[in-house]
Image (cartoon, rainbow, N blue to C red):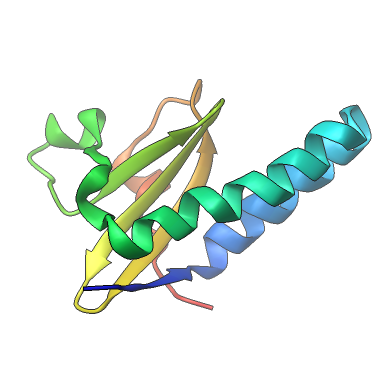
Amino acid sequence: MRREVILSAKAWEDLEALLGYLEMQSPATAIRYAREIPLALESLETFPESGRFIPELLDEGIRRWREILFEHQRILYRIQEANVVVVRIVDARQLLTYEVAMETNPR
């Protein structure tokens, strides 16, 4: 069953901030990320359970969020009925807490 991938408002903010930062540092990398992150998200339409449970949240007994990794980014999402809701896109070197993952308002 194919699912629709929806980005939360916070995930859109995260993506825009990431691409803006990369644009200043390396325009070529920003272009590559802008092209390849949507491809990574597209894979969740068909294989939403391919991501792992988020280890830090598993330690707290929370199993409703998963993640896929894209280079130095963690794409956090949850499966919700016929949708995959991308909750956040965060730097993989950032300590992840429940509060970081909380924003879930789809755009």
